[in-house]
Amino acid sequence: MKKGYNIAIDGPAGAGKSTIARRIAKELNFIYVDTGAMYRAMALYLIRKGMEPADTKGIAGACREAEISIKYQDGEQVVLLDGENVNAYLRTEEVGNMASYSSMVPEVREKLVELQQKLAASADVVMDGRDIGTVVLPGADVKVYLTASSATRAKRRYLELQEKGETADLAVIEQDIIDRDYRDMHREHSPLRQAEDAVLVDSSDLTIEEVVERIKSLCG
Ligand code: DC
Image (cartoon, rainbow, N blue to C red):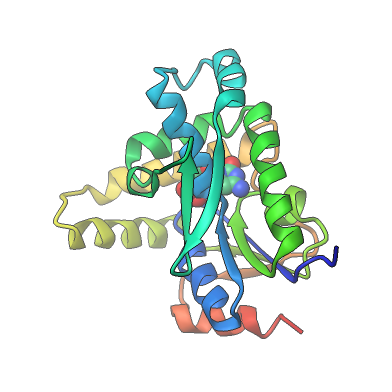
């Protein structure tokens, strides 16, 4: 089977990966694969099973039974957990926090990486995550490491929450981002790092359009 054209975008939480990847996918008529949502769906499964984030052994066993798959509806990725559309439950702090722990467990990663590789082999994809250029798609046609300062990322998250009418503390958000970065970058398995052949894009002082154009210009 001919491999699809693969664009890999990695980077820390809040760098704008999903916004950018979604835009590029739309403009190039590619499929957008949000791998963070898969880790979040697994985290939701584990929360529903009553697992504790620190129970690595329990998570390694329980994750085998979770049936995670994805489908596309009106161009949007829908994550199915045991057949149920769980998109609406994935973006909470509780799920994000569990995902940041459960994604350290090798059994969880193995299962989701296999699903991601299958998707990329059969279609043109823009895939975002933490280990796409390094582990999932080492042979990707284009690799980008998208980042932004923790202050910029905290400000974006703060404005997002304000828009939803939620109160938030900027300093707490920034500390949370710094802690999550540390966990993502220092875990034993597939830590977040820039692949040697990835292009570094710092979005701190760029508009969404500028980042999209920069990445599109890398696609030959
Ligand atoms: O990008 P996100 O916030 O939706 O990701 C949720 C968690 O999953 C985050 O802690 C990092 C982890 N993750 C990962 O380990 N590997 C990926 N390819 C994507 C996400």
